Image (cartoon, rainbow, N blue to C red; front, side, top):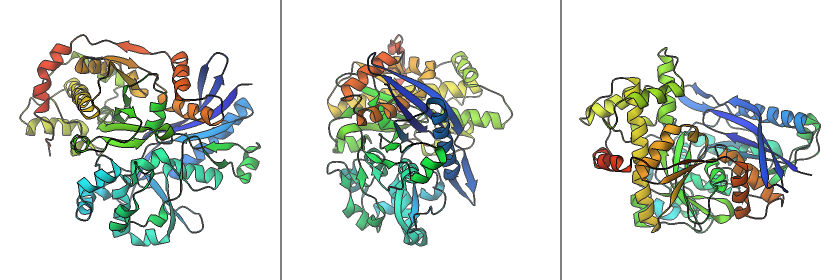
Length: 494
């Protein structure tokens, strides 16, 4: 009898519940969406929050719909974005809504942290790229400026661990999500307690770690009664969505990947961390993967640039689809201007097209005037960023890569895939589009003994998923403009 797996996948703007069914004879995973819901940021009293109880309400709806559809669920797994967390008090209750990583409370926090622990020391201990969104800066802010909240708290739970706690009553920190915090020593596989002590961050808040493939526990009795079901194990999958996506990469041996979504996660899979002066200089990060592996990557501002631009034009009254924007970008003249996708002004919500224009004006470039010109600038700048990071990845790892695996929902943007192949002068293998969900389901199947190892997972993914191939056709043209692009790295249009 085939196993029926329920996977929840949360992104920055939406979440969904997917049923995975594994046919062990045909080596196929079939995936079906049964519930989708928005994940809406809530602005209140000057801060950005996640509406966590509504999201848990949607988790319960997803479980209910899954049981109605298939009758019996063999396991549940949850993956989400990284770095964010909730505080739980001594009675086991939630202390407020979790704050969104884009909230401005962490502006200036890295600089304050570096007065006590240098940027170099922090990287050498944790191997994590310096980004103000990281948990360590959020928690440092709370410990210094909101100590009353920290005093009232007994535990810190990352977002997927919070959902697991609400389902099972068990408090754990899953390995892959914990490593996004900038508070874990990846070489030792434990919290960097000495760093936290120096910063006045209370390590008592941090729960014991759990590895992907272990079970948090079973559904609470009251939830089983509510759903009318037998106990269901809640599995700690690779709860950081990037780690789940990488688990599903249909690749062999050394491979490079871009997990394409709101962020572009650009990297490779390694057996252990690489923490060197060279990796620090190019800001590569060492996050946890399945079975102790390291997802060695660079966080790049990804489709957020396109998503937030579209939202701005819609706010201005223009009903434009992503297909419209891609079409307009194709019609615009190429290589007229570039942005540094990771410039700080592009992090926050708001008039992103206006910020693109300002960046180009301040840096002395042609200022894009139309939607198509702005979109062309964003697309080409993203692809150039990939080109830059491919050379850096090869330099730091000492390896070369024959192809690029592009994973996740962003591969539906075929223009970005084509530009990426041309910019990097590499064959791009795009798929699966449901990489995170398939990785989530596969981890549960590994935990249940339905698959034996990662190699088998990736063979099954190849069997189960259509892959699109993009060969480079204009690499010389992109090479000719790369030096021009590099002039604007590290610049700001503020």
